[in-house]
Image (tube, rainbow, N blue to C red; front, side, top):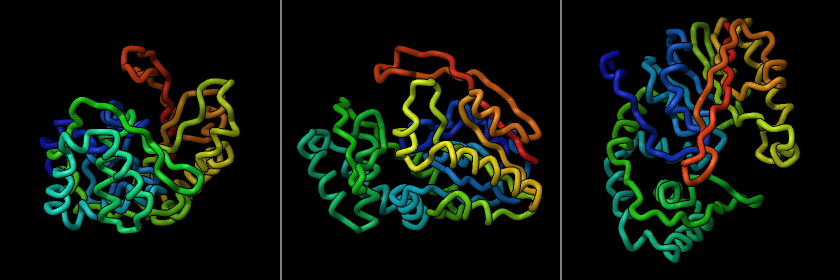
Length: 277
C-alpha cells in the first residue's frame, strides 16, 4: 500500500469506546518503521487501518471481536452480504434487537455470533460492548433512526486484513511474539481520570492498576531484550507518569472528549504517549 493511499484517514467499521481514530495521525507519527506492527489491545483497529507496515499481529482478549475479524479476513464477500441483510427497518426495533441478543448469547456458532455482534454494535446503545459476569452480552437497544451499515469500511478492513494475523490471548503472550525491529503499540483500558473513580469497579474489567504497572514492565523488558519499540497510550495522570518513568520519551497531548451521550459536552483531556526503544 503506497503512502499516498494512507493520506485518507480510514474509519473502523465498529463503534468503539476509546477508539483511536481521532489520534491516529499523532500515533502513526510516533511509531517508527518496522517489519511488523503488533497490537496487544487492537480494539476497533484504527491504528492498524491508518498505518503502513508489511505485517501485523493483532490481539484482543475479546473472542467475539477476533472471530469477527478472522471471518472478515477469510470470507469477506459472503459475510458483508449476510450482514447487510440484517440492517433493515424491521430489525431496528427493540423486540428484534433483544431476540437477536438472546440468540447470540445462546449460540456458539462463530459466524452467527459475528453477524449479530456487528448488528448489535450498530443498533445497541452508544456503540458499547459489554458482557455480564456469566459472559452474556448485555448492551440495551440504542433507538437510532437509521443505523449506518459500514460497507466501505468493512471492505477496506477485509483487504488490509490480508497482511494481519489475528490472535486472542493475554497481552504478555502477545509480547513474546515480538522480534527485533518489530513495533508494538499498546492501547490498554485507560486508568480512571478522577480520584473518585472507584478502583475496585474499574478493576472489574480485568485490567486494574497491577496490570497497568505490569504492562509498563513488559514494555521495558521487550525494548531492552528484543530491540523492539513499544508505544503505550493512556490518560495523563500522576499515576501513569510514575509507571512510565523509565520510558525514553513521554509526550502529552490534549484531546477533545465527548463526555455525554448527546455529544454536546466536550472537554479537553490530556493523553500520555510513552515510548520505549
